[in-house]
Image 1: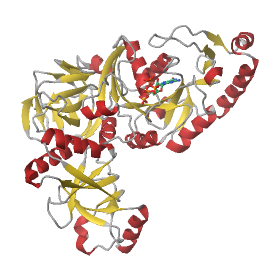
Image 2: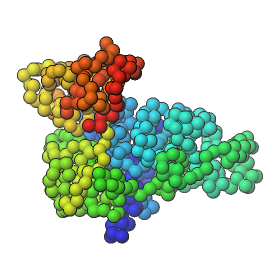
Image 3: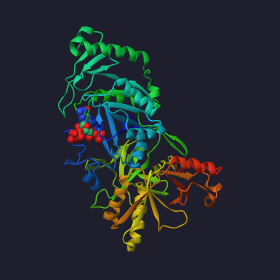
Image 4: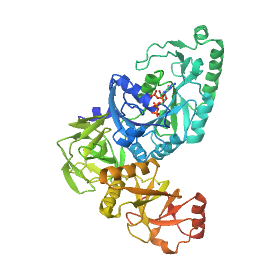
Length: 531
Ligand code: G4P
């Protein structure tokens, strides 16, 4: 056992995912409140008003009142050191969101009880499934009229393909919300609408076995319904199985109301009991265990110009093993250099705290003089291994970029290449020409605005974006066996290449993808760029 094993084992690092407006920010605020990280709930994120968001680094975020970038929060609760990775909650999210999930060991999924699974949740969920990380569900807004509980669970199972196991069960909703039934303790925790920003605590617990007390508390109608539902649930629901939870096959579900602070602490406690210590990660030399190895980390996000005054670039890394010390030398594997990390910091709210040490499970930001790329590994100088790469997700929106002032060619190319390097956008060229025609692909359309804004503000280049009809991109897996020139696709297919020269095809609809595969026997197409 290392002397830092205990520090690592008390770490819990998770991402919070939800459809916009489901209550992710409110829930995060309440978590922080329990941890005493902030005094007043409400200071995590402001909407379009004067309150500033934790992650409002870019002007565009402030203008629109949404968060584009992800942020990291750390707080202590019940002996645990918790790292929350916030994911941008806007529909037009970027690849950043996906990558943030790569740095988490589990995910909390917030669902609006009146809506069920929404588009955004579905997309993010796919990434969790791919990584097989545990997912914990909080069904929020029970103080408002909710959909039928069985329907909500059904929705999660069908839409997301994961079994559910309710930890507690709601009694009514909206004006009729009486509280939740705790399945483990077999008692009802009655709903108490605590004031905003205060900790919960006024709730009373009534064992369901004491039926008279139960009926007196929640009324005959609600009691009958509850007893019937408990029977159904105990008979039909998936059994609780911690192994299945940890394998990402079963999600524990809690019901509550983040706004009125009901059910939040119960959820947090259950979550902390069930979630894992920092997970081992796959590298080219095998699995790297957090407590058995010396320091190692991988870069999952790069953010430029976070502070306009300094024009800096920060590389965010997830520590995967060992202890980090600001004085230590580390090996940047891809760069082939041994170095000290410059200005290691923890980024929280508008604050940046310079760190002297951190442990596996933690996220640190370091000053990046332009040497890091997403997916890079850092490790002890004595070692040399690489963590598995972070997959590039297929962009779903494309536009042709034109420069308005052609004299500024150099700045334009530099700017667009740097922004692409950060991973905010992907750039492509016409198959047979050079950089004069640039096609940009993004995962969320908001990234187009971000690109335009950043090129103007940071590189002084004005551009025009003409959107293209393509929505499906495919890399050619067996490119060495295929003569790209001779490929016959559909009339709406476009051949392009990425910055590394890899050929790829753009399609307007899935039908064209199928047709092209039919017409070119032996062609293998892939949605992910593995090169
Ligand atoms: P998000 O981060 O997932 O986008 O959601 P956020 O927490 O910002 O919540 C979206 C809206 O839903 C907010 O109202 C918030 O107060 C409300 N909300 C969150 N949890 C609950 C809940 O348990 N019950 C009820 N009734 N409402 C909840 P808003 O009016 O849009 O914003 P604000 O002005 O209150 O910040």
